[in-house]
Length: 193
Image (cartoon, rainbow, N blue to C red):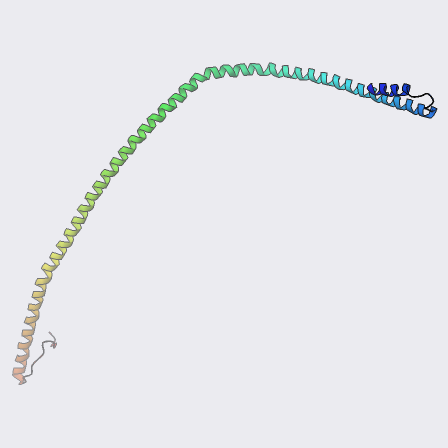
């Protein structure tokens, strides 16, 4: 509207001789176009305002529908939370107490296991000592038995070898006595005996 006033005031302030009839027609067409565009713009603004009012009204209706459906749900969940809150508190207290009991029992079990482990190690050390002692004694007995058998066996073997050598010499002389030969025999010769 302001533009139309400016154009109109411009037209009255001019000299009547300064405008030609062609220019005045063009000016009138221009003013008509501006007025028409202003009218279209006003209609568009009114339509937008009406559409916004309808959208606002529809939005409020949707909000009221959601509120009508959600409020009972919120109230029931609120009452559910109020009912279960003490129970949840009791459950958490029980869990804390159970945790303390389990920790105490785990400590007690650890002490028992450590004690059992130390006793087992002590018994294993005793058994190891006993087995080592038995093995050492068995080894000593074995050596004693070997010495006890080897020494007399060597002596008996030496005695038997001495007797054999003596018999060989005697038999050799007896054979040589009858045949007239007097040769000395070595103790290592084998006569078939």
